[in-house]
Length: 341
Ligand code: S3P
View 1 (cartoon, helix red, strand yellow):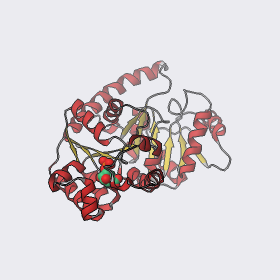
View 2 (view 1 turned 60 degrees about the vertical axis):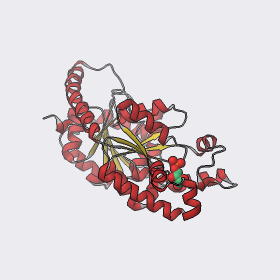
View 3 (view 1 turned 180 degrees about the horizontal axis):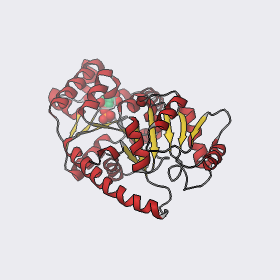
View 4 (view 1 turned 90 degrees about the vertical axis):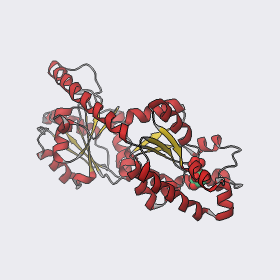
């Protein structure tokens, strides 16, 4: 009954969404609500907005503001953000949740339903309208918690809908697998074990499955049979997991998503979470490690940088969610994953 109001995603703020990952997944245009989504109700554009839009344009996104507010408010905001050379569209008096202006926004941005995202803070106008228009919606927490009385009432109704939404999501989560991908040393195994223990999942590690099956360590397999042989084993293990795994947390080898065939299998297997890490952290964590054959080179640092640059895009493209892990504890990362699904 409430499904038509459910957002596709929830995020803490418009500023914490993984836009790079979404671009890698093929999204090209973003429609933003303004009030309480980008700034406090009625406020002018600030540095944070300008910075975000500059970043988005740098990535390659087109942007359109879509507000139910009147022309003077929206124009004032628009003028505050318009950045030299950056094309930004705006629509005022949008009558959300009517779909007409969502469609107009896509025409202005030259995007389609499949390549457009919507970000807003209200369920019954913003998200409902985006859902009706067939656009993937992000619900963000309102910037200002103190709101006018008519909004306070709406928020109470929203809370009811969100209660059912979250309950359904938890039910769905009980059936799913969580698949962790990311570079060597990003913490897939430790985070996976922690998540599994805390939330009642079984834990598996694809490297460990391969070692168990062949009776050889990953290093021995690379040395005796070569990398291609190991990659074939990875695909085999993955296919088997797709057939059998239920309610498991699966930590994968860092090279697993590189094969295109595996990318599809990983997404089929479950909710794919990419633990993104900087080369500096990898270097520090894997100091003295001898178990990763790909890093047993004199120029370990440049190899890490090279491989990470090469794979970053593949990881982003494969993942449903991206979590930056630098400086965070294993337990905090596990919790972040849980909150994001
Ligand atoms: C590899 C990562 C390793 C292991 C093998 C190859 C890679 O797993 O599968 O050494 O290509 O990145 P971890 O990511 O668990 O270290």
